[in-house]
Length: 352
Image (cartoon, rainbow, N blue to C red):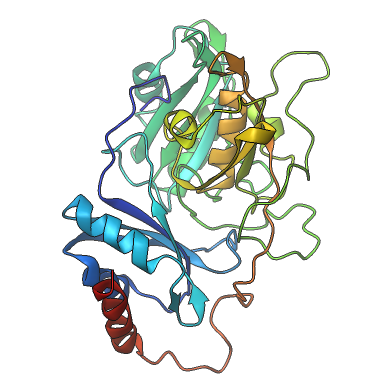
């Protein structure tokens, strides 16, 4: 599955739901969102690596678009277990790819120009639990950027792939193979998802991750001192792993979300876009730190209305969600008041 340029996929009745208390189950979320219409599928992604302040996120897919629109209008900002949920459209470039949540993600560098997704996949197919292989492409030239990513269902296979294939020849070059985030030596979130693992906070000074998007800062712009493009390996370590916000600069005043969505949705889920077109910039919040890093590297210089955009790390800031470290409030029993929540939400929808 490549992140090469592609036509924008039609919008599905598919919603992103953020700021979910760890006590919210998929069954509970289905019951609550069913007040807007028939729910086809619900998936909750646990925040095992504390990327979102201990709050989970998930996705709700409806049978029809009208129900999804109703849920978006009425449920965004509502409280479940005293936490205001965020509801938005879930944008995803590849609609039918395997969910790699919980898989182990590997970086492959120094790829020769002739290596594509299929060649990369076949080279690592011997490691039986390979679930995804993709080469990253320059969206202006259509050429390979010289690196890609793998996902494995089993950590042992990922470790063996790194040990066996690092330095081996693929095409006309010897490739570099390592964990997608070297700070953690594996088992960090990938494309998309949060397998869990050690560390990953770098120089975290105690600010609570998650929440809204702040201004640009917290990391230098992705420009190499030698004038060339900065590598993914450098960008991904520039800021703490809870940061998933990309600053997008040099925008024309009439730039809209519709101009940015097709670019970013080929890389991962978009949970939020905040436009400041009159001031020439925007903030795009993706699902994982790794996907945000990929967006910064891959979309740097991409032309939007004739201007090359400038991408760097934005700055995640804590909101007033009041999440406690580790999720649930200590000593508070996980009772089931969501029946009352459903009645409240249904009442709100009836007023629309």
